[in-house]
Image (cartoon, rainbow, N blue to C red):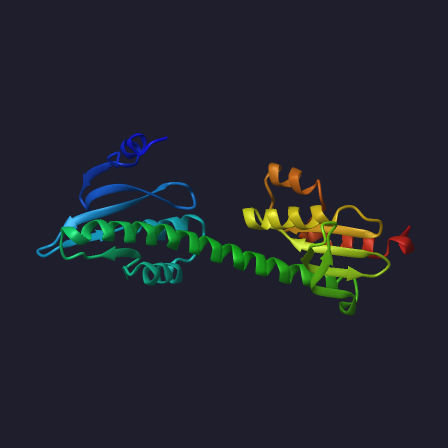
Length: 242
């Protein structure tokens, strides 16, 4: 591949259309939904007004997330302003117009991603606390270890959210429908493998999709949060209950 072959591809004219909010430019940046970020450009008496049309805010709301803090972080990172749920820049002349478009589009994509990640982090934290409450209903709190480390077959030391040590050992990780959470469960429990008297629980509160469920069942028991106390008691005292 030569540069002469790549340049026409890289320099293709992006989609642009005139709107009431200015020229709408489709950028190569993407929201978590994989929709492209659109930037709007209009002229001022002196310079230009460049903004994302509230795209990052709408993306966050569509995923059920709050957006204020995410926009502020992204705006600070890319040196653009935040006003009424919109990321914007006001370059003084044509020389600064293209950098402003890049800054606004990247900030908008980043803000939407940060809002989604913050929401997922809160969901995971809430789930872990609910798991702890469920475990305490099944075994004495003194039998529950938090952020427990267990060495896998590769020699790697994996951290699980909880461990219950009674007549057998139960290793427990929370899981939500998110790539990082799913991969963490699969890698951890896959490397630990099947061992006698070691039980592995991937605990969820919101239904996982079929592909995720099928994947995780290869390495662990998928346990709904509401069933956790019963399942914990069953496996913790297996010898006594059998």
